[in-house]
Amino acid sequence: MHIHIIQHESFEAPGAFITWIQQRQHTYTTSHLYLGDALPENSEAFDMLLIMGGPQSPYSSMDEFPHFDTVAEQAVIKQAIDDDKIVLGVCLGAQMISNALGANTTASPNKEIGLLPVTLSKEGQKDTLFSDFPTVFGCGHWHGDMPGLTDDAVIIAQSDGCPRQIVRYGPKVYGLQCHFEFTAKDINNMLTNCHEELEREKDKPYVQSPEQLIANDYSSANHLLFIFLDRLTSPAPIQVRNF
Image (cartoon, rainbow, N blue to C red):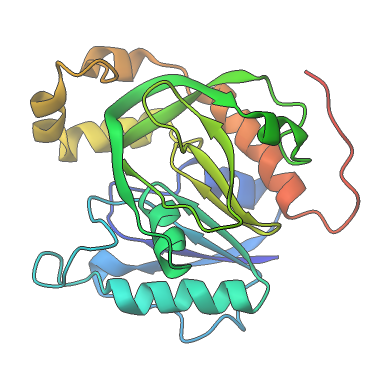
């Protein structure tokens, strides 16, 4: 399987996704937009499209972020969905999927930064990709917005601070507002590049301190990510695993 990654900023990296890709002996390419790389011209060269996060929103202009063409990127995402590719978005990536499908991203009720609990919905517990996940599990967060909902979108999971943490837009299309992929290195990069935001939001109820962010163990979320990805990319019937 070949995965193409759209990466908006150096500090919003694929993290544990790369570990999974390498362990499963898949191949990948990356559009490093912050370095001036082009978006893929079409979806013929990849089996899966992975869209990462960033400080932008689907409404950001090229005046604000010259390397971020939201219209062109949404067109790439929509084409990949129409071509029946696996499409997975993280944080901003989830929001870009929703907007590409005509469902507007909105502000989340709360800012969330840290390792915080996420709860599967009843529909999430029925979804074969999540059906035996713990009902409540810890996951990384760094966001203030959330993806919109199409008419047939299904909320798979929510948190106390945000009602749309995982959204299924189709059998092969998922938006993850939360960050399963965070590693210690990713958190350090986020702290280096987003420390002003963290200082600004530090008194919010769902925002952890830099010390707590560093102390958190993100490995359990990484483990759940690998299970989810194995199931999402499996051509064979999925065997349910028990924890």
